Image (cartoon, rainbow, N blue to C red; front, side):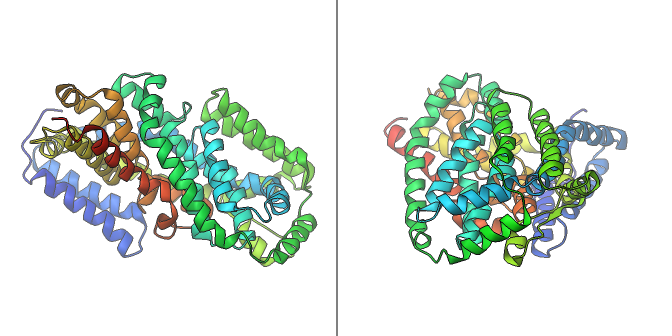
Length: 451
């Protein structure tokens, strides 16, 4: 596709498209409609500017092909949430959790558990849709507000996207800045260690108000779980298998698929469900059927069909970004944002802003990694900054802020699996908004005297 002069300023094209997206959120209409309107508007402008319909359709088809694997993963996540419930895995974890978590600071414990599990699984949304829903159930049973609990779990889960060697995003950063994992993780530790300590302390303080609550309700929940499910330690083989497969580096789709197969078997053997009932739950969602309505409200999933809107948002976001990228809208914007940068601290702050901005407008972290990661390397070399600093800045900003935005793919998946929106849990996802602050603090501490 050759370069052509646009009839409208690129920033105006992008701005109007963003208005459509934000407008759909404000008006509470499906988010994918905002993306569709943005795509239609952008294509009309591009056609008027001389691009052919054939060229633009080729971009759209290429976008669909690039996102097909992600769409499959999203569908499998919807299925996984249902199967972890129907098989009795989540109720079993809740049952034992109610027994052993009583009296401890559960918020801090949940943050640490999610952080460790996410390191092994290598996927934030995968951790949220499996171990996350079990810990969320325990937290709700302990009387912790849902939005607080989900915010804590997100802080732990997104450690995966930031530092796990199994994370696709971490590996994308390594490939983009041409650094190996040892070099990347060494650079990340500068901001990561104080970040984890501060976040854990904050959750410990918040969790104090829930550590000495009334636990009489837990006995009722445990009895309801015992009546409604056959609990057994054998059921914990499912999360063990999923975590082990993740640790050894098995492909995510294969890992989830194996987990689904095991979950189907466990549902039939332990919960005496028919194959038809299990498949119905996988497709259309699962609803708990115990003697406690409050417990039933915790044991709900939407299944694969609940993920269709998420997939439409993903496709809309990727198509719109590809139109921006191929038609030369994003690169001039980045060049303007980097104009006049001569200080190391300024470069790091601008990098964080660019990465965050790209993640925000594209609804996914990928562009927030690739564009600044590729384009800014020469600028980092010019100011004598190593690419590990570039990697850390992107990791601390564009990657970690993703679940805070209501229109982001991650927040959509989280809402589908937990029922809690980004607007509700964002104030409690401490790590996600403390991380960008930390990287700015580190920049001033290390480089404020260097030009």
